[in-house]
Image (cartoon, rainbow, N blue to C red; front, side, top):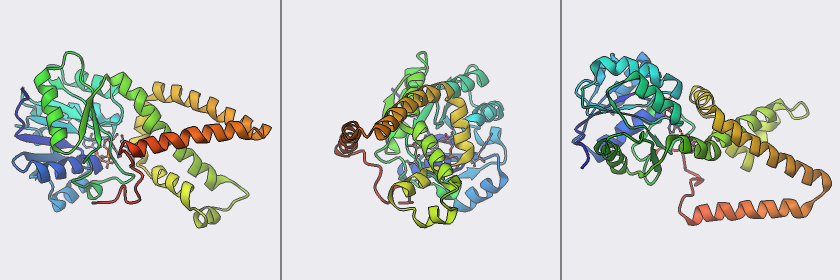
Length: 302
Ligand SMILES: NC(=O)c1ccc[n+]([C@@H]2O[C@H](COP(=O)([O-])OP(=O)(O)OC[C@H]3O[C@@H](n4cnc5c(N)ncnc54)[C@H](O)[C@@H]3O)[C@@H](O)[C@H]2O)c1
Ligand SMILES: O=C(O)C(=O)C[C@]1(C(=O)O)C=C[C@@H](O)C=C1
C-alpha cells in the first residue's frame, strides 16, 4: 500500500519544479501544491503564473503539512535546501528530489534530514530552457522517471513516489543510485559535455569566423547548439557531482575517438563504414522502441 499524498511542497520553481506543479494541477486536481524558491524574482513569477496554490517566501513554511516534499534545485544546492526545510517538515513527510545525479544527492539528503524518509527520483525529461515560465504540464508524459531509494527505504514511501510519477504520466523504473549515475553519464551527461565542447570549439576556430558558424549552422551542428544552451549552473553541478562516472565514460569515449581519428588518417574506410552502420542501427532501434525524442518540436511547450 502506498501512503496517501494530499499535499505536495515543491522547493525550486524553475523548469522542472514548475512542470511538476503544473502536471499535478492538471492530472491530480485534488492534491494541494505549495512552493518556494530562493530567488524572489522566481517567486514573483511563480505567483503570477499561478501553478501553485501558495508560494511561500520561507522554505520551512512552504513544507508545513506536506506529505511529500520535492526538491527541484540544482544538485549542488540540495543539501542547503534540505537544511532550510528541516524546521517545517512533518514527521511523516517523504522527501524526494528531481536531481540529474543520484548517489551524492541521496547521501546529502539523508545526512541533512536524519529520521526522515528520503526517496530520490530523476525524471529523465527536460529541455534546454530554465525558469518557471519554461515549464509545462505534459513534460513527463511517456518519459522515464528513475527512482533510487536506499535499500532500507520504507516500501510504502517508495510506492507513493512511484505512484505520483505514474500519475504525472511517467514510466517508473527503480534502480541503485550508483548504477543510475553510470547509465546517465553515458546517455545524458557525456552528450551534454560533447555539445558544450563542440559548440565552444567551433566558435573559437580562427579560420572560421563566428558569423560563419551562425550563418551555416544547419542540421547536425544546430542540434548540438540546442543541448549546449542548457543551464550552466545545473550542468556545472551535474559534472561536479557525477565526476567519477563521467570521467570513466569520457576515458572510453576518448579511446573510441582516437580509433576513429586513426581510421581517418589511415584512410581505413571499412572501419569508418562499420562504425557508422552500427550507430545507424542503434538509432533505428531507439525509434522502433518508440523512444524517439528527436522529434522536431521536442522541447517546446505543448
Ligand atoms: N533541465 C532539465 O532538463 C532537467 C531534467 C531533469 C532533472 N533536472 C534536475 O532538476 C533540478 C532543477 O533543474 P531546472 O532545470 O528546473 O533548473 P532551473 O534553473 O530552471 O530551476 C532551479 C530553481 O532552483 C532555485 N534554487 C536554487 N537554489 C535554491 C535553494 N537553495 N532553495 C530554493 N530554491 C533554490 C533557483 O532559483 C531556480 O529557480 C536540477 O537538480 C536538475 O539536475 C533538470
Ligand atoms: O533534451 C534535453 O534538453 C535534455 O537534455 C534532457 C535531459 C537529457 O539529457 O535527456 C537532461 C538532463 C536531465 O537530467 C534529464 C533529461
